[in-house]
Length: 608
Image (tube, rainbow, N blue to C red; front, side, top):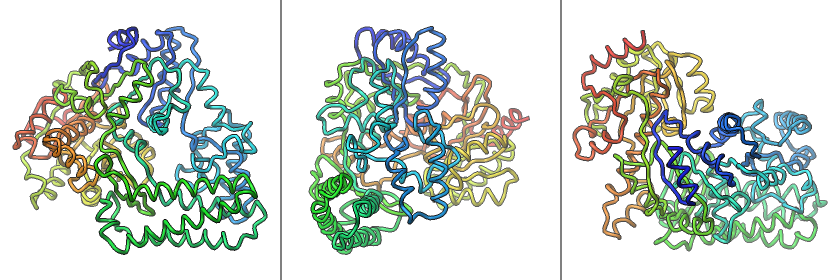
């Protein structure tokens, strides 16, 4: 793999590489990239992987090669302490006592941090209400007009990145940088000769989010709060503007109440255009936003901060208006509901043309790599989604002896839509977990299934049952590793990016093939677009995507040469439908079994 990447870099070419678990793909791209003498940008799927690469893998490779390269880690601005907003929050006497205590902790840390990365301050939870008060976003950053600009951690991080030979970023920052209105790049990509996109299977969805547009309840509430604070700092007194901000607050809450209550994605037409209450609430929000923008425009001369809030209000007005007029042949409009709040979004149906334009503007060696990019050895689905049809591909299989180390159980259960499936699936889970004495992931394809399965298992089995959502993901994983015999029941976020080597994970049970919900508005729009081109959306989009997701889930099991374990895929369609062979041909070459008794014997042997 390293040789293939070295050749691509030497010739200034691009490459797509699938590398099975245990290949050592991180070193396989780091070594030739570091030896090339060129400027390198490496993008990873998450901030956690970004930190692992920067803190562990990159120093090891650099030291082993004896190359004295300057390296830098760059995250989005909301990951860095903003001294100006921290000082504003400290001066605001309306904060709750718990927030004040957190602010005091942040202020004490601010005096000793070397780079302002809030990940250093692990004593404050990731979702603490203090973080939006002491960090900035693209919306509320004052830029060079900020009174603490000369001390800005974001500016310093970007300066170091510009001077570095190797810059480590994450996909969110990479595609946000790439999506700057197609008018050129921002801070990350200028001057890059080699761009490595690791965990590249995540790139299409991440890119779609940044090449689209969105307006969220959080943006609006932060605009209201920041405008009121800036007004107070400017001396207050503008009763009319305060009333307009209160009316905007009412309008945001009004739209939230009018939108469908069920969490998840909803089609724009059903959620807004065909519902009179939601349609009226959106129009009321548009009117309230325009009033606030007008009021802020009149007050803008009083301070830099108020002027910046006016620009934010104007941008929000533009996005909300554009969402109502978006070209539905190119974009899909949809509404996302959270436990609290909402987002209004427009997502491009394809990012291929945007990626192609980005590659034209940056004629570097683009290396795309992941453990899951091909479907039964075929890369065409990924190539088409990313505009990489002419890009060469390589597939390097895992060095693990799957036939000896693992078993694939294909049990005889009803199909998932059968009323008997859920109870028989839970009974099977109980049998397998008893045989393995725990050490199991039960991966479900929906939150409803997760809750139902978790409740039953928690009542029946002796082992500790850890349930997604009951605690932050990293704490659940820490508890799972520490216990050694626990059972973790999870859904989408545990199908990938989770590494539990050794005996602690020896059983992975998957309830059903991970097809995306046919009711998802983005899936529906993409399917309609494919049909208009004379293609079958199931075969060209939904099936290959599900195959890659199943590969990710299966990849949780064997993480090292000494690992042993059993994977149970409990969806009968993998055996009864013609497309099932595509799934099986894409999985590692495990020894297949169909008898549950045989599976129990194997689990008892490896768990002894």
